[in-house]
Amino acid sequence: MAKISCGEATIRLLEKYGVDTVFGIPGVHTLEFYRALGEGSAIRHVQARNELGAGFMADGYARSSGKPGVCLTISGPGVTNAATALGQAWADSLPLLLISAEAPSHTLGKGRGALHEVTDLNAVTRPLTAFSVCASHAEEVPELLARAFESFSSGRPRPVHIAIPTDILETLVEDDWTPGKPSGNRPDDTAKAGEIAKRVRAATMPVLLVGGGAAGADVTALAERSGAIVLSSNAGKGIVPENHPLSLGGALCRPEGRNLLASADLVIAIGTEMSETDSYVENLNLSGSLVRIDIDPSQITNNYPAEISMVCDASAAVDAILGEMGDGNADHRKQVAQVENIRKEIRHSLSGSEPKHAVLLERLRDTLPDEALILSDATQITYSASFLLPVNLPRRFHYAAGYCALGFAFPNAIGAKFANPELPVVAIAGDGGTMFTVQELVTAAEQKLPIPLILWHNDGYKQIRDDMRSANVPRVAVDGIAPDYPALARAMHCHAVQPDSPEAFAGEIRNAFKADRPTLIVVREDSPWLNPA
Image (cartoon, rainbow, N blue to C red; front, side, top):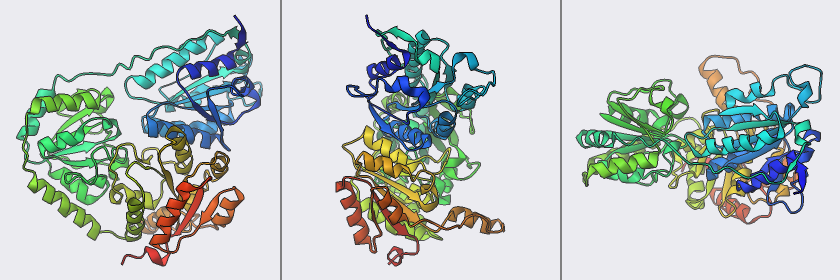
């Protein structure tokens, strides 16, 4: 049997696990990986322009598909650049696999000044991962990959980092590595379904609080059977269609939504941390009983301890509760009217730039099909999209509110497009956040990806400007000069436009989906066409 290097064998093993795309930048320490990524490889390699972008691409691949996203980097700066993406994947429970080189085995931990040396590289990524390990010999790599893919398939997915020293990457091994068979075993504790169903039947004002962990569960049927009003986190948007008469979507971040939650006599939280990044308040006011359903047992007592809990896959849990409920109550006119009134309250209480956000988001929703993927950065228009942009399918709106880095939206969109080439993909970012990863426009242009990037231009970090004003802090370092964004985009082989009307904006979105490259769509906050009629 022919022998190949450990680096080659690692890539071939990823192929056997079904990996079709990796994101990264080659370096002198990763040459053995790239030996297997040339012509004839079943894996597409996407060259990012910074490892941060590569990590965010792998994150976007994972968050939009549920399949592991893979990032390939050098040791040292490659890993530290990608570490922010690991933090984001940890916060959002995503199966991201970072495979990196490491300095030669005999130098590890000795501080000899080896190239790209970190005296304990895995200590850097360990707090951001399910596990972070360094292979001690070539034959250990298949075991580590099997452990990674098993962790992705069972329980709560988290990122994984596997480092391989350069001397081990060069070691010759038999070309017979075989993948493990991920069990897919998930907690299945449905014993309390009958007790929860009894609570639901007795409740007069139940509310379902839905997070990303509820994707795949028939929460709509539970709402309809129980008459419960639905609130969602950002990750939970679309699990119950937001055009449903019982859905308030992402209104948890609004006082109107939180007031509803406070008035509920029963709250069933499904697949959500109930964290401050979902509600924008440190503590939610819960006066009713709390039921929590989560695949992660640590969440049952985290933030808000539950009276009743099920450590279970959300789909199995909801099915079990529905099986115990019977026909339920079909008359939900009171709740439907309450939802409609709250929607009106929210629209009438918009302030600051929110009315302008509403104009653009309404036009965007009218232009996009429901199946479009929307990747949104940390910017004020995204905060408004949480409650103003209706989403009617799960895993279609992505805003990494938990870790809340900047610059993730566009590289996320690149990863999402590779994972879902048949779907329209759009990115939304602010002018400040765009500069964190603007170089990835070149990556998307090189790959001929028809992704529109809607750049909301408010001349700097407006959210922080607003916070400084509210806190009576001097306005420092939140303005600065901006580049000529259209010229910058064109220099990166992209189209660039500045629409001057709602109709022109919609037209440019449609044109962007037909293009052979990204389109930067600059929308200035002070544009007259954004003023509400």
